[in-house]
Image (cartoon, rainbow, N blue to C red):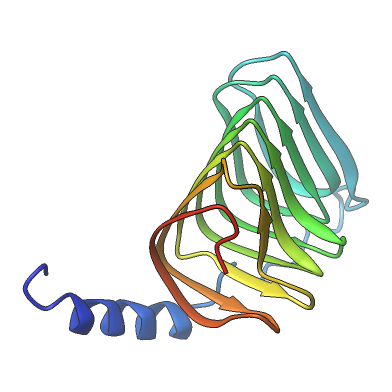
Length: 168
C-alpha cells in the first residue's frame, strides 16, 4: 500500500464513487416520519438514528449518530462519531466548535458543508458538496481526510491527508 500509494488511492476513490453514500429505504407506513429536533446537553453515550431537522450537541461525550438524515448538526465542546448518514439542506451542514468529530461514509451538502473552530475532524469516505465552499475553519482546526470527495467552486476532487485551517 505504501509503495504504491497513488494507485491505492485511485482504486479506493473509484470504489467510493461507485457506492451510494446511504442506502435508500422507505419508512414504515405505521411509523411517525416527521423529522424532529435532537438535542444532547451535558450527556454521555447518546445515540441518534433516523430523521432530524437538526441535532444539537452541547458538551456531550461519546455520542453516536448512525444512519441519520439531518438538515444540520451542531457540536459545541463535544465528541461525536457520525456514520452512514446524510446532512443537507442548511447553510452549514456540520458546525463544530472545540469538538472532536469522527465521520465515516457521510454526505454533507450545503452552502458550506463544514464550519469548524478549534476542532479536530477525522473524515473517511466523506462527500462534501458545497455551493459556496467545501470547508470554512479557523487556523486552530485540524482535518484528517481519508479518501474524501469535495465538490465546490473552490475545490473539486479527492481530499486525502492532514490539513490545518481552511482545508479546501
